[in-house]
Amino acid sequence: MTEIDYQFIAKRRAQKRQEYLKHRNAYLRRAKVYYQKNKQKCKTQAIKWNREHPRRRKEIISKYRQKNIFQTRKKAEQLRFINKDEYNKYARDRYAKRKLIVMMHYSKNGKCQCCGESTIEFLTIDHITQRKLLNHLRGFSGRKLYDWLIQNNFPDGFQVLCFNCNFAKWKMGRCPHQRVVIT
Ligand SMILES: [Zn+2]
Ligand SMILES: [Zn+2]
Image (cartoon, rainbow, N blue to C red; front, side):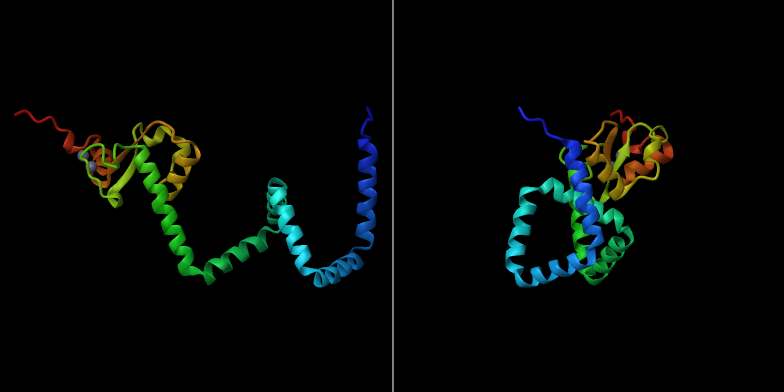
């Protein structure tokens, strides 16, 4: 069995890096010329590499983004501005989809647990135990809350109420719908 000499490999790698840094500009110039001459080949190779190393690719991209966070943000902002309508539509669709997922999870057939209201625009997520107890959820509502619930695999302690019932519960501690009717 041959043992791998990691120290040697690391040393060699560092040497190569030094060499590269010394002649960086010349190297980049040459690489550019090569790319111009062999565009198609480079592209297919890149696509192939990306497909074979999806995890490494993700790492590289996120590292790049972190390093260039200002440019990344600026670019994203510009793109959002240029494709405003498209972006807004995407955001709306995503919101609607996620809201539906959450509502279906925390209710029977997407209805208010109290009065049975089923118009999705009227439905909200109610913290069964008071919001105060869930400190980390303070200020969470709408999109953020739905994202959080999905990310955390739908924790217990939530139910679907319509705006009316939710408001009544919050204001009076109990919805008027829940008055016991004796006939
Ligand atoms: Zn209701
Ligand atoms: Zn009610």
